[in-house]
Length: 81
Image (cartoon, rainbow, N blue to C red; front, side, top):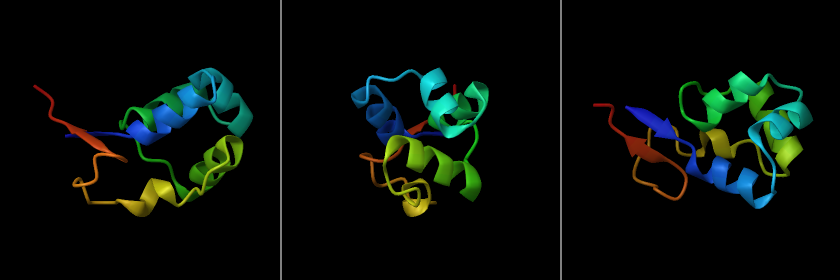
């Protein structure tokens, strides 16, 4: 299963920013940011803090629903075919 961070993409789009712009603001590689947003990888604490600071949200949101897929407002579960 892949866990899409729907709230992260929604926040970025609400800011009118591209993945590249957010990655640059956070001092991260664009590929890594893309993987976080698309659920391929989960950010470590340092990366979560950088993204939270760049996007003005509490970085602990990345870990709030760890293991809990019943909150579709934060994570959307997609089964790979």
